[in-house]
Image 1 (tube, helix red, strand yellow):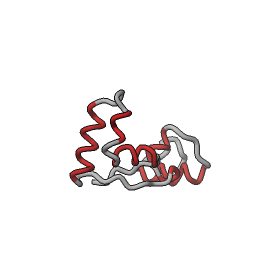
Image 2 (image 1 turned 180 degrees about the vertical axis):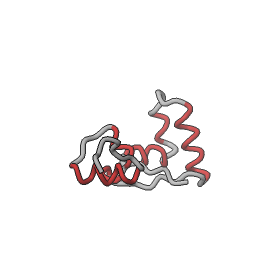
Image 3 (image 1 turned 60 degrees about the horizontal axis):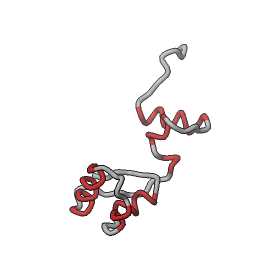
Image 4 (image 1 turned 90 degrees about the vertical axis):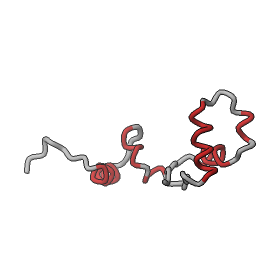
Length: 82
C-alpha cells in the first residue's frame, strides 16, 4: 500500500531505523508504521506538494489547481446554477 507523502525528511526518518533513538517524543504510531514499512506492507513514495490531495484542506492554491483537486476528490459546488 503506497502512503504518499510530500515531506522527504519524514520519509527519511521512517526509513532509517537508527535515527529513531533521537526521536523519543514520537508515539507508538511511528514504530508501528516503521515496522510496516520495513516489512514491505507500506511503501512511502515522494509526491510533490501540489499533487497531494489532502493539501486542499490546509494550503492555498491557484484556482485551476484547486478545481482539479476538487474534481479528483469528487467535490462539487452545490450552488452553481446549471
